[in-house]
Every structure is written in structure tokens, then in C-alpha cells.
Length: 161
Length: 323
Image (cartoon, rainbow over all chains, first blue to last red; front, side, top):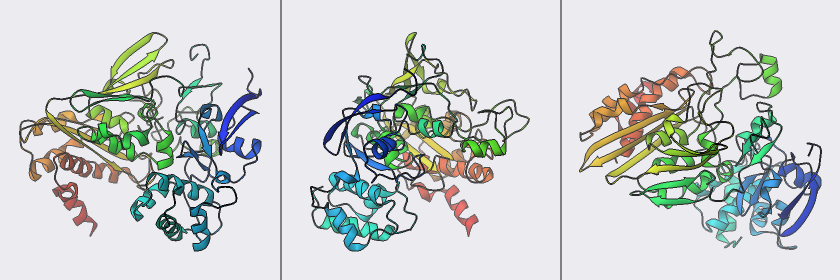
């Protein structure tokens, strides 16, 4: 096998099984965006320092820029595109929109997914827990306060994930 | 596979490896994933029998695992302070034990390193930290490694030649490039932390600029076993003050057989920073990191003794100096 040979990868993304031919050295981020057309997941630092590329793997926050797709066969990947239920936005998405918890919006997909992982584990988190859970995701517009408030709002409405 | 693909590397969480690949610190023909190996994600045991941890257990799992709630709390604390929540969900114990030693002149992009002049560790022939040095001074930047030494853990390595067991303090070498006694074809399979019939307490303190993010620029791990209010044996190790985790167990010996009070803890901590020799090659000034070493040893010891970590004499000195 040469490095330029594509290999088959079977991924389960947003509840859908898919088998695609990809270059084995591509990261999950590149495969999601370039091969699956799921461009909601963003390129950031590419080095695991900003978490903008965050997705969920088996419900836990993962950095797609550092994950190798071949390693994720048999696991459940959730991207921002899989967060809404059909046409119904996720309660976190509603709360973020209502409170304007985004400025440029670039970190928002990762913020939402990371917050979802927190609420799935801890439906009524304290402010400190929210800060901890989101601490890895950098927002360079410094909009953290509204983000924390939006997570609290979604939690108070009994988001069941 | 490792022996038939020379130069290949193993990948588990990938959180240390993949950034290094992208910055071309690592240049490898192939990656070999460890993630499908059976048994790598098991945790078994308790404080009395000891705990065996599969090398593939994630740092996030260890940070919250009930088996590490008591005597081995330092290990949970260390895992809980590695980088960000995202990295902890991906990174594994085996990977953190073997984090590639770091340096301001090495952990940079390819173009930065090219512009500054390549260093001994990658592509160059001199150490940019100490130009006349024949060796590399990259810093051991693992949070779990000093804890493994303090808890006297043993790792099981599996390679082409079979399994072998190595005590944590024999796993590391004092060199920023050639930093481990693990051979290239070997992987850490599991980590065993011995049990104790005596009551045991442990603590880990970490210094870094951003508490939600950074690698340690100082780590202090201590473990105390107790006999009716008296310290039976104290063990400890420092992280990020050299190219390998540094034992301070000998410096903690004055605690043995005594009931530690404020004065004794301060006195022991004041002397136990002696083997710490931070250089000017990580974040913040090395003078300050050296100065904080004894303070963090005091805090870790106080926490392991069950008293307010911040109320010690050395902490008070730092506070007074800052006003």
C-alpha cells in the first residue's frame, strides 16, 4: 500500500452508516468537511489547542483535527449537522440564538456540541461546571458570558439532549 | 508490525503525536494504531490490592474513576489537569506517560524552526538552550509520570521479545531525545500501582500559565503511607524540571516516623527542591519556576497530610513577597 492509496473507512456519522474511500492520512476533520460535505465542523489551529474542530465521539468531546478516521470505525460521530432533531433545533441551539451567544460564530458548532456533551452527562450543571466543560473551546470574540447563560437557559428548560 | 515498518510509530489518543506530525517534529512512514487491542482499556483493583490500569484508558476516565478516589488520588488529579477536556477524552495514560519531551525551541512549526535554526532534537546539530551542550535539554512534560514515580508504579511493556515489567523510575532516561528505556518495538500495555495495607494518601500540584490548558512547567507528586497519625514512608517526584521526572523521595525522608506539622512540612519542602534544575526553555522564567518548586512541594505535602494546602509557611512567604 502506498501512501497515496485510498482505503475504505466505515464511519457512523449523525446516526447514518457510511462507507467512503479516503486517503488514510487524512484527519477526521478533513474527511468530514471534504469527503462528507459536513462543513459545520471548523478548521482552527489544527494542533488541538483551540477545539474549534470539536465533534462528539460516543457522546464525548473529541478533536476532529487530531483524530484518525480509521481509528473511529464502530464508533458514533456526531457533528453540528446532527444536533437538530429533524427540523427541530436542539434546545441549546434555541437558547444560543435567543441570547445571541455568538459573535463571529466560528467556535459556535464546537461550543454547542461540547455543551450538549455536558448536559447529557449533567442536566443541571453549575456555572463552574459549564466553565470547566467549555474551557477547551476558545472564543476569540470573548463572548463567554452569553454562552454560559445560554447553556444555563437550555438546562433550565430541561434539555434532555 | 513495528519491526517490519522501521521508523513507524504507535498511535493511541494521538493528541501528542498528531500535532508533532503536523509540525514535522515526527516524520514517519506509517502509524500503527493500538486502539483495537483487547484489554487496553480495563481498570481493576482497589487501594488494598493495588490497581492495574490498561494503557489505553483515557485521562478523562481516570480523572473520575472510583478506584482512584482514595490512596491514588494524585493520579486522578494529574489526569484531570492534562490539557483540555477534549484532549482528556482522547488521550490515554500510556501516551501521557511517554509524552515527547518539550522545549521552546522544538515545539514550533517547521518554518519557525527553520528560521530560528534547527535544534539538536530535530534536523539540527546544536542545542539552542545550551549551545555547548552535547545533549538535548527538552523537558519531561507529563503530568502522570511524576505520579507514577511517587506511587511506585510498574509498567508492563510488550514487544517483539515478549513482555517485561519496568518500575516507573526506570522507564525514563535523562535526555530530551532518548528519554525512555522503552524500545521502539515496545508498547506500554498496563500500569500497576501497588496496594498497601497501611493507609495511604497522595496529592499532585501543577504549575502552568493557563489552568485550563497548558502542559506543566512544574508538577509535584507526593504519596504518604501512614501509621496511626505518623508518616511511615513518604515518596515524591517532580515533573517538568528536567528531561525526566525527578525523584525527591530521599529529601522527604525526614518525614518518616514523625507526625508532620506546619513547621516540619515547610522545612522538608524547603530542602526538597534541590534536584529541580529548570532551564530557560519552557513557559515563564526558570528562576521563578525554581522558586515555586519548594512552595508547590509544600502545598502537595500539606494536601496529602489533610491540612489546607495554601496555609503553609512557604506559601505565606510568596504572598508577602508579592505585596
